[in-house]
Length: 591
Image (cartoon, rainbow, N blue to C red):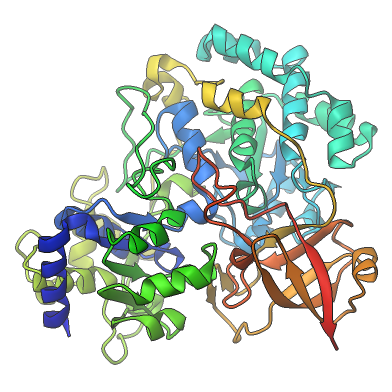
């Protein structure tokens, strides 16, 4: 099989150039450090820039804003639950998702730890989520109102309560003035109307944030990042953290330098990276091609072969029917996964990957981990049948193509431990010590102040990027009528179902909306947007505010992606499709 695949890839590269071979890295490899790194190495060896990831489906605003404000897309604020202070969670449910921006093992314990240290928790979400149940305050704001709400908070802080030392020492004066002008229309009264929340509740929120100077932490999640102006919500999160002097300080949110992927200071502020020939209007995000451009590149004949590592784009991308037809037209579709799914059925080549307990691993999500350091875990059981670690699969594919991934080493002679030790060759920790420490890990001391002192260009946050100021001025606020928002589920990881068959797509609705639509609890319904429709089973849930219907993100066969366009309403800054807070209607389909 590999000989056939190698010959096909050789021919494609020779005839159409290296960019005709692409790779999609998805959530299934989110915690496979060797596999993730090998994907990047493989693209480098192939000489291809056709690199796609799930980031431009749900996470791109986080990367875009970090780059615009701090000069590096991978710089990420990390929460420290044991410090107390004020935690504000917007459009995120870390009890289920285990964190977004800060990865949290045992999230309920971390929330309790935060409160036992004297901390308070405020959740802003249209649903009383599992996280909201652990909060001191739940504000059920209207989807799409987050920009106006956070802008109003920032406006009031600039008027009274901002950290003047932070602004004068670590921000450009012209940025502070430009931000003040841009925020002028965003009053608390406007936020109250947009969010559908009492003015007194928002005034109390301002006082809480004002009183948390140096001790504010904020999460945003897919409820906001997948929205039309998710990039503005993420930017305003950074703005509020900077205004309160809560970034890069003990007691607020800190940054991890990383171990394997160690962060380096920017030499200049990054410039917008050009997109593909078929979608030049969509920038690359942290070097990645926009996910919505994949189908255009295939249809144009520029992408002729694709390696999919740990994901199912049909369950997450917009317009899956069009994408399915495009994938069928590829000369080679290589699927690397641990389970059979729709993608393996479409593939020309299926390569079974070792599952999580069948391979060794390092913690690679260093920039988003609240623990600073590194852990190693060995394989627990031997791989079954023909399953192999992803790094070895990629090395074998490249060897069959006449290319080298491992610097001349024989893939069959290397162990997981040797490959992972190689990743640590330039790290500040000794590889042998990391492997010997095992799951107990080796901690590095938490660092504070290093970003402002030695990382930021000229020692200043870019508080008011021109592109974001322009977007803020054009912001239209929430949609009227019924809107759809995605949600996360226990035992799910995007399109990967960890437990159960996941056959039933369940839409949550408030009783008043269900009654107006004529649907009942347990009944079937169609959710319809101007781009498509899906069939769901309705669940009546009073924890969701009226005017909102919620569907699981990434559900195979009934994904919100079927309601979304990859051509219209695609964010020009983050290259993300509009997949949260958009108008829908609901119609009953029978018992």
